[in-house]
Image 1 (tube, rainbow, N blue to C red):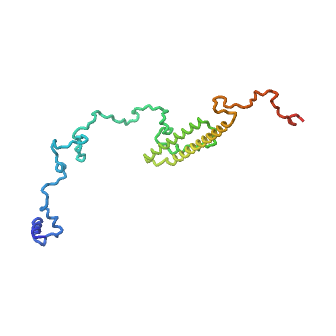
Image 2: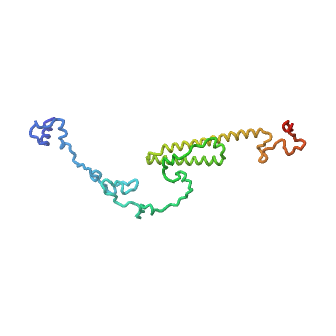
Image 3: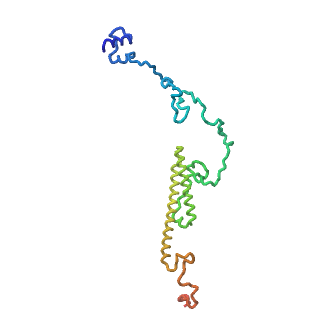
Length: 252
């Protein structure tokens, strides 16, 4: 550090002697007057970003005249928002005064809700179910009964899936175990229905192959598919063979 720099530091800091001069590593911080900028900095938006003339302003890409208005200054919008000036309807707080929407009681969307038509079922309602249908029981059912039972299971599974999603959204924390147990029984019933239908399909295929190889059955005809080779009504009385009599039948 030369004498001129030390003199500037003494003049700037106001010390009286060289012994009071600060250490050398602090001298650059005390030489503010030597490199201080002539412009004055400010956090004000008007100083940092001065307004341009209307001819120098760039057009906003979205044509929004209120672009750049800061909400932190609590100035709000300079111009009214482009919306209708009509008064918005107020919500009706009293449930008795609310208008009731007429909904069909047999609407298919009610299949996604429980019998009480509520959003969530209680654990007791989900737990109130019986066992699954067995294959032995379903073998005696008709095609229409199996078809109806299948879609009842589908509706029940859709309802359980809807309530599961709603419980996860609301973070209810209950009903998951009862819902899963009910869904297991429903899926076992659907599996039994598929088993019974598969057995009928194999039985139908076996019968079709036997009928195709049977000379008395003509699968190409629409009427009188079965034509026996010997008709009982065409035989005469003399041609009918009587069964042999036994000793017990003759009374001996």
